[in-house]
Image 1 (spheres, one colour):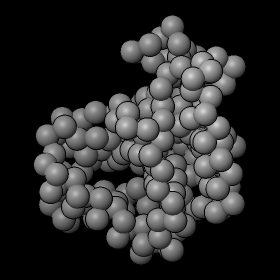
Image 2 (tube, rainbow, N blue to C red):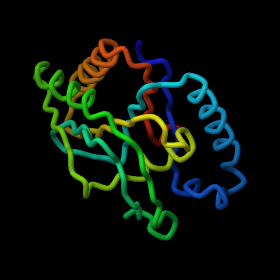
Image 3 (cartoon, rainbow, N blue to C red):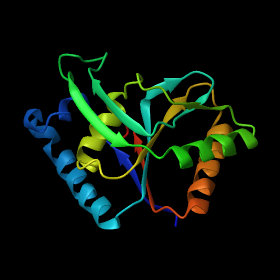
Length: 179
């Protein structure tokens, strides 16, 4: 299998809680609901998500935890996003395969397996809409500020190769401001 669907997802704080969505953003959330149905129909084996709010300076980080559980209060906007509980399975095996493949490609990739690490809202918000049942394992990735475009492209190729070789039907989500 391979990457079956790529999604550029919104994560604006104002959509975190469905009951608080401003009217001008309802169309955006309606589209995310449609994509959720598409993801559900695909029955993926894996969700990969890159959040522009998980910033790193030099290394590319991969959250390799077996379980992603926490309570998010966003440091940027605690008045809008607070006490948001999330629980998702991880896929430690494929996450570690990506880390090792990245290292073999001479990319500075580091595995993070820290039960106290709390996901950012660029990860939590889109998954609330795109994976509301939390029923597909998730691997999350950082954005590396010092990486060149070439290094970023190469890292993406490495991730895709690992996904292709795994046989896992995968949805790749980029959570960014362009959405």
